[in-house]
Image 1 (tube, rainbow, N blue to C red):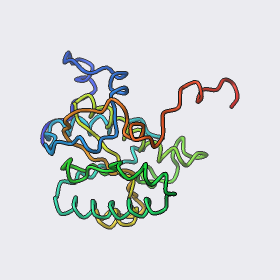
Image 2 (image 1 turned 45 degrees about the vertical axis):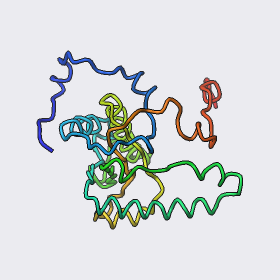
Image 3 (image 1 turned 90 degrees about the horizontal axis):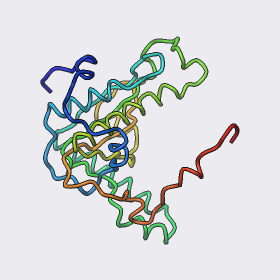
Length: 222
């Protein structure tokens, strides 16, 4: 991708209209069926990845990498693997849940035209990671923060993102030749969309509704 990465100073001085963070959170959807097939322009994708790369991380290790995949053969190979994993999951469900699951589309790998695979490197930063000494998961959670930054920046750019989680990690590792101990933590389908659904797919299809905040909020003790 071409173009320069904007500095923090540039970001602070911009006067371009930008979607507010609360609006981006409200509009964010896990996109599956709405990809148009139009590729995201390189300069836009770079802005989105810049936002991801600006995420906070434990010990400032920045343990993520981003593998941009647009090769049609690779997309097709991964899509076929995901279809197999989806079928195995469907077979494991009781009849009533399988009936609910059947119409739910779980990926837009080929339709989006772009996969961004976010990886996590537990060795980055060396042995002594400030902030990870007692909570090992803070490293993996740092990669998750980069994913969230990417997702919200994409929404602000009117770009859809779909997180694919129906895969065997070893298969994806081999497909993209990811070296040990680095591991893939997310395949994100990224592309232009016809629209963002008002209601998340899993709610629309009756798989599971959203919990109200009151059910998740606790004070002082759990």
